[in-house]
Length: 291
Image (cartoon, rainbow, N blue to C red; front, side):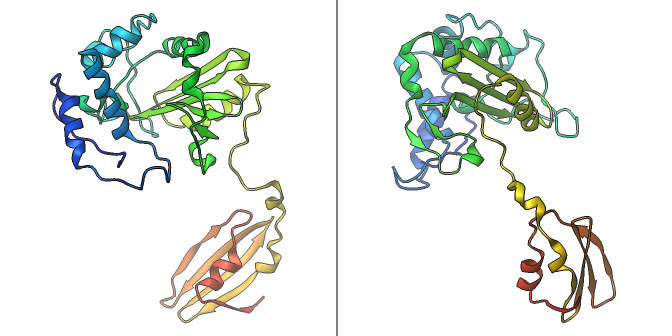
């Protein structure tokens, strides 16, 4: 099913039920069994199943059957419950407070509504998964991830992103990001909760230190040999009707100057190693006229 279906059905206790009823009109993104996709719709239907089986709303079932038994006293789902705590407001990359607390209505609670928590509570939740073999089935490999650089995992279980050294899950809301990584063999769980910009880089730098000894794949980047590209072969003047491009090189960094027919000189543009200058200018119909 299409995974990004959202419908605000109000804040009544029947909001999830009404939203799931509307899912009858949601089509498929691809035939079953042919691809993998994050599915908000699927989680909402799962949340509705919880409501039917327990006879409770999603928020009450989560609180009574998970949060309270685990002692997660710093966690809540509804904004009026969060008011009891010193909550952190999300911020933009420039440092400004986000204009809204959340963009997801209560009817989307099971797939990504506001579940506010503390770092300590998230670690306690992870401890539950380490303390009992009952939950190990959730970490069974269900499907491969075709592009691990985008999803940052090797596979997917039931709700968990899987790595060859453990499991975890990321989350994001309005100006807030969360990261949880668990290493079962070491009995280690690390969580990072942020409410500002630059979260991904902070996570990458911090977890490489905290998970020392665990083989975490290096961030996606050009291979080291790319820094040795010789740009001398690209230096020259390229032109086509109405356009002339001058390519120069200084300290291994290429620079471009573009002259248009009306005489305007565009600012020099620097490119990094492996930027494919020759392919780019020739693909656009330019020919080199001098070096």
